[in-house]
Each structure stands twice: as structure tokens, then as C-alpha cells.
Image (tube, rainbow, N blue to C red; front, side, top):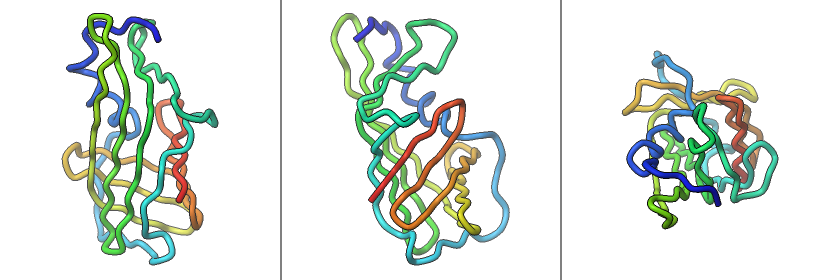
Length: 143
């Protein structure tokens, strides 16, 4: 693992925000019952976890994504959790981040609108699989 000084304080918000594009959501989210459930993060950019993810211009602006989940509830809410590792002062530090909001599905498209960040993430969904693409990375969740 590369040395990642000073990332503990800023990496957590950056990783989840990297999944989202700016904007807010209007309307009532809907979620067909066949999509409700807990999905586990299985890959980033087609690579099995852990995956090193760069979010800045510097070679030190990287984190190792080690785990994650996406829970889609029948009421149209979602909770996304990511676990990643950064290196602070030569010691690996595990960090967890959670985001929640509203999920809506239209055909094979899914829209996640964060309650806390006024951001949205889009992707595709099929029964048993969700892919969220943003910032040049694709996060694949399966149940």
C-alpha cells in the first residue's frame, strides 16, 4: 500500500461524493419490490475488492476500497455504506462512510438522491445487480 498522509480527515466525504453528480431530486421515488434488498459491493471498475481508487490529482490521493453495501428498501429509501483504508503516518486506518436518501427506478435505470448531500448518483439495475457509475469508476453491487 502506498503512503497516504493526511487523508483520514478528507477521504471519507470524497469517496462517497465521488459516486454522485450534483443536483437534487424532485418527485416521489418508486422502487419495485423485486429490487428491494441488500446488495454487497463486489467490484470497482470490474476489479474484485480491495481496489485502489484515486480521487485527486496527486499520487497520494488514493484509498483502498475494501467493502461496501447498498440497501434498497421497499419504501424507496436507500443506505449505502463503504469501507476503505487509508494510511496515516505509516499505519493503515480503516474508515467507514454511510449515505442515505431516496431511490427510484425507471426501467433499468436507478437514481439515488442523497438526503444529506444534495447529490444524485445514477446507474443501472437488474434483479440481483446494481451498477453505479460516476467520476470514471463503476461500482458493482450484487445480492
